Amino acid sequence: MFPRSLTYHDNKSFFLFGPRGVGKTGWLRRTFPNELYFDLLEARTYSQLLADPTRLAERIPHDYSGWVILVEVQRIPELLNEVRRLIESRRLRFIMKCSSARALHRKGVNLLAGRALTRFMHPLTIKEHLLVSKVLPIFRASHYFCACSDLSLLCEAYDFSSHPEV
Image (cartoon, rainbow, N blue to C red; front, side, top):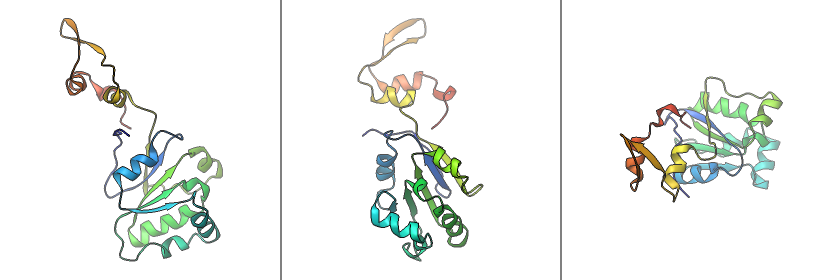
């Protein structure tokens, strides 16, 4: 797996949207290896939280101050009301990974306006592609073309500011 250029704020909850297979779960596991995960693809976790979303609060230690990560949160949209309550009452920080933003929008659920940011993980950005590509592109440097043998030089020479951050 290779690094992704995804930014987040240390003190602000966020949704992580993106199509299946772009590396959301891998990025979460690498970036937040020791945090509290609730995977809604696990049958027991899913059935318990579906039956009673307030069980989420019971499963988070009262003195916990790290990130709480909900994987495939679109499976239980009602859980977002409990997330909102926990953000406000216990000042917890959540990452809500979701493969289908459409599923949440279609159900008209609480998207935590003002309490959670939105981040998107797309398939490789141009910068990421250049960093992992085995083929080094040729770029115009000054008045001549040259093959770049140093990716850091290429990334410095190429203006990535015109591309949106992911």
